[in-house]
Amino acid sequence: MKNIFKIVKKELDKIFKFPRTIFSTLLLPGLILFVIYAIIGSLVSVEIDKIEQHVGIVHVINAPDSFSFAKETASDSKIEFIDSAIDQLPELEEEIKLGSVDAVLVFDENFDQSIMEKTGVPAVKIYYNPTENNSTETFNKLYVLIDTQKAKLLEDLEIDPNIFLASLEEVFDEKKAAGSFLGMLLPLLLVSFIFAGAMSIGADAIAGEKERGTLATLLMAPLKRDEIILGKIVSTTIINFCYAASSFIGIIGALPFMKSLVGSGGAVISYGVPDYLGLLGIIIVLSVFASTILLVTSTIAKTVKEASMYAMPIYMIVMLLPMFTLFSQAKTETPLVYIIPVYNCIIALKGVLSTEIDLLSYLLTIGSMLIYIALLVFLLIRLFKRERVLFSK
Image 1 (cartoon, rainbow, N blue to C red):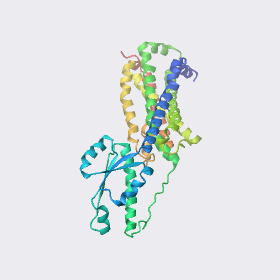
Image 2 (image 1 turned 30 degrees about the vertical axis):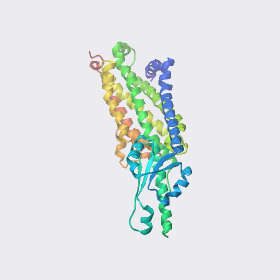
Image 3 (image 1 turned 45 degrees about the horizontal axis):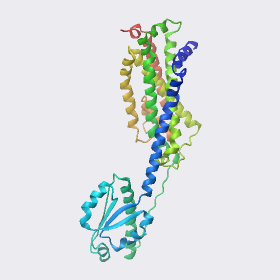
Image 4 (image 1 turned 60 degrees about the vertical axis):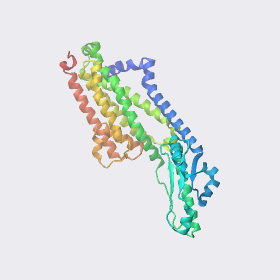
């Protein structure tokens, strides 16, 4: 065990003895994410405020008397109504596309008369641009006004518009809603940082020693090869965990700036100690797995460049896995998915963040990852005992 700690210290000294590498390993990942998502959250909030304060420009063609109330309440609804003619419609459509006009309302001629005399079913068309936020917001307001107009017309026809009432009752867990947002964001970032760190550190850990000729010196030291490889695994895992922890803290720190994105009044993080311990366990096993599998590629390779080339397909596959879970539910009906390496950690992260994971699924994730890690460590030890692998030309 003492010799393993010597190897760990030797590897960690490459990082922690220099202020620049400490900054890039511990502080920079979290700082970058904090700045990026704080800026995104602030910009989104500003944009939402602009949309809410925007006064929609709406041209009305063949406006009936039953719609006059809308013009009277225009200031309250933040809409400016302009009367126009039907022959202006092509020109107004172009202006909607350009964004200078938010919407156009076109009523059939004799709209009110057709309703009162029951001679037909008149129509009203709303022209708007769904690619423009201001136009979409104006459309939503117009839809409400038209519903109000319909209710007033029913009253004029002595038909009770409240023959039945429909109401919406939103029943959801704010913590779970906020966790679902984090579950979309966090696994992708954590996997990215963990495997990117493993690539940069793992490629140099063994292949770099080969390339510099220091591996032979290390093997001549009074150390068992098992101790050397275990020391390499522990040291690269610690560094990868620092990358992941830093990015996690950066995202959590940026959450107050992302209230508009999360949409839960800013009460985003209210996890308890068991939740954080659950996240910690997943991050640790994922860091160990990434370190171990990329040390395998580094052991097989002759140079750092070759090790990076071998590691790239693994990194690309791993980066694709979070995409499959991006918009899926955190809870899955098939327990077997919790034994698929890396993928199980991603869905388990989502489950912990949204509080939807059960103990069995969590234990399957941790247990299966430990088995994969043990198999990779066994493979590494076998490879490290082969001279042909370590000293191949």
